[in-house]
Image (cartoon, rainbow, N blue to C red; front, side, top):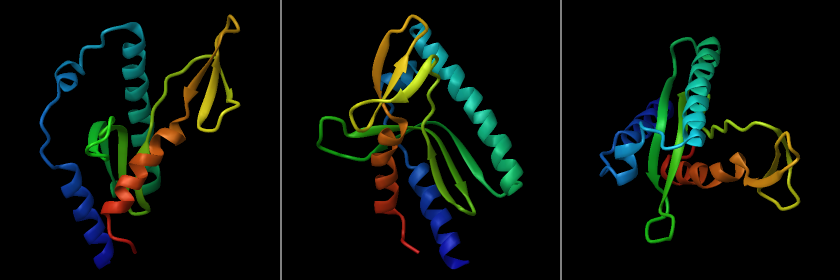
Length: 148
């Protein structure tokens, strides 16, 4: 019981830390193009489905944070921050969700860490896998939370 409380407090403090708003944060609620608007629509849909699923599994015993949550996971590098779309803290653990609102056929790519999206016209484009995107975010939380 003590470790669960400690884990919850640590996660809460980590998530409620003040951060300086970036230029991107100021414009985040105004999609600049169709792709951004579709992405935001997909994230809103995913948030609603996550809330439904978590309520079915946990009742009211969970916290679901709607992103974007910006974490500074690699200070001093070319890409020091990462964006978390959705974060759930449940009795079962902490879960990081990456939302994609892709259309077309999604298949494994020839290179590790990539997926291939093929549209109706047969045009194929490799994209970074959501699992690959979340590796650094999960490592960030594992390095800061107490092990059980």
